[in-house]
Amino acid sequence: MISQHAKDAFDYLVSTALKGALCAPSESPCEVEIITDTKAITEKKVFLLTVSSYLFRVMTLMYFTLDRQTKQHFAAISKTEPESMSDDDFLDVIGECGNIFCGTLNRELAKHFPHLGMSTPNVLDRDCVDHLSELKAGYVQHFKIKVNDALTMHASLCVCDFADIDFTVDMTQVEESNGELELF
Image 1 (cartoon, rainbow, N blue to C red):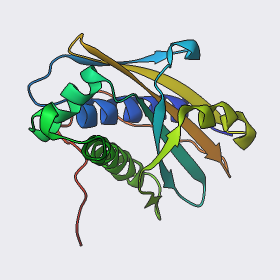
Image 2: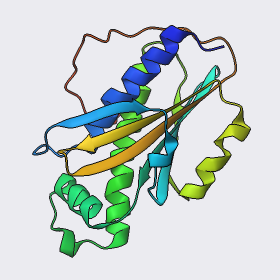
Image 3: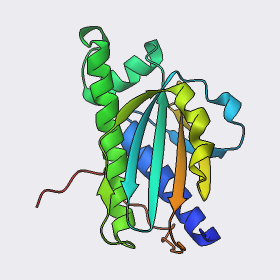
């Protein structure tokens, strides 16, 4: 069972990590809100990333379509001209943003749970998401990300629990971090 405190903490951590990973420094504002109507999620592809422990597996899905707006946005993040980037280049930038997002989430969860592991991003077709219910997750949440009133993207959180999960985070702290990976 996942407590309501833990659900709120997951929502907060995912929202904060999305803002840090998906906004170029010149872009403001970046808003993340919880949505209940998944019909608005129309992007064609999804990056799947996981953070796992002995107690849970957190799967995060970042939805995208390589259209003109999305390409311009991720070119701004990589400080590159969109015309000079191939589709593979864009996938690399989106995947790196996913790694930053996942790294932030991993670091914050590590404050509460030892022995965490992260996946590398996997690109899937959007149709795969329709089968999330087969995982029998203890918690699923969907998010809308609006960047600079010009680009709207979506993300989903799916937490499979293997034991009781209860933790809280300080939601009053604003940390200026973008989830860099730490080297040991």
